[in-house]
Amino acid sequence: MEKLIKSVFDPQLIKKDFPVFKRQVNGKSLIYLDNAATTQKPESVINCIDNYYRKHNSNIHRGVHTLSYESTVMYEEAHKKVADFIGAKDWKEIIFTRNATESINLLAYGWGLHRLQEGDEVLITIMEHHSNIVPWQMLRDLKGIKINVLGVDNKGNLKLDELPGLLSEKTKLVSIIHASNVLGTVNPIKQITQEAKKVGALVLIDAAQSVPHIPIDVNEIGCDFLVASGHKMMGPTGIGFIYGRQNLLEDMDPFMYGGDMIEKVTLTESTWNELPWKFEAGTPNIAGGIGLGAAVDYLENIGLQNIYNHEEELLRYALEKMSEFDWINIYGHKSDSESVGVISFNVDGVHPHDVAGMLDEQGIAVRSGHHCAQPLMHDLSMDYTARISFYVYNTKEEIDLCIETLKKVKKLFG
Image (spheres, rainbow, N blue to C red):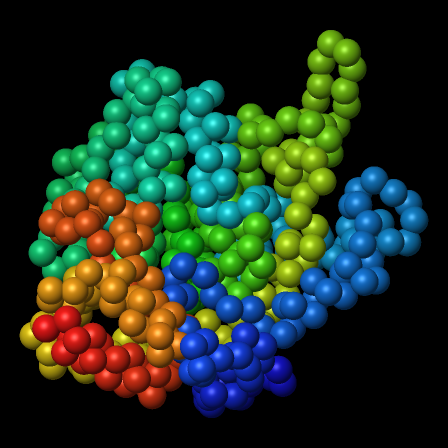
């Protein structure tokens, strides 16, 4: 795609960059509204991966021949692109993983398993994805730590007035989602980070739902760690990253052990490689990392602020249209707080899976289920919702078609 003029944003033009939209689903043009689960991939990312395998495929760091050198440069350059994208001070603060889930586990094992003691506390919120709950439960069972939980109010916002009472000198980590994949709520992570620092706690931000949509600067936020998944930001599946402050990463123990993460090995002892390779054991997902770098290029070409503005316009339009029907129950979005383009809803008398199934018959892809956020769903007194989520290639016309189909769903099921 040619360089976009910053004042012009045309989702129809952008859509042409994505091969998937050339196909039909059930005889209908594809309308993809499941972007919180994963995003579609532009031609530039697909071509980048194809080009790597066709012309450069080789293992990195382990050869002096041309292909190995080229692969190494491309893979390291991808780290630098991600570092610049989120405002990291040094590209060595970027560790490539499989996804945000593995990134959180890297911290839980590499830091938590060796640093947390019985009685230490970790603070999370009730709106966390399972990936930011289960690893801390593992440490609770192994180490005897305590997990504190910050709740949400009836508007879908965190109960920030309760935050100081949950923080103490025992709090060693605040691990918090930036944007909810259920409610769309964007949490005030800078404010929360500042509160955490008052008691000396480290801060981990789960930015899987925000990095693709909102301009982020980790130094401006002041967090210690930040994680994201490549597949939610137009990159390939099987690649993600964790940002960590360099001094903390250097002090941490490795997550996995083996090739390339070592400096020296004898039969009696081993020493570790420099960052970031200390945490990237074995042959990594080289093509995925390079593809993630290409996705960052594409996002920066469009501009994160342009993306956010477009999604905000779609979100407000969809909320206004959906609110016209009293049989559509929307969760969250009950205040003027910042939100990403995610709407979870239910249709009275219709199971979310049936809603999603009928939408699919019209070529409209949405999500239904508990969205890997069962504690939040329980707090909202439900088991499942349907969910639509927007990205750069979505339009108001697609929202209109979605709502027209929802009207047919309601009529059919009564």
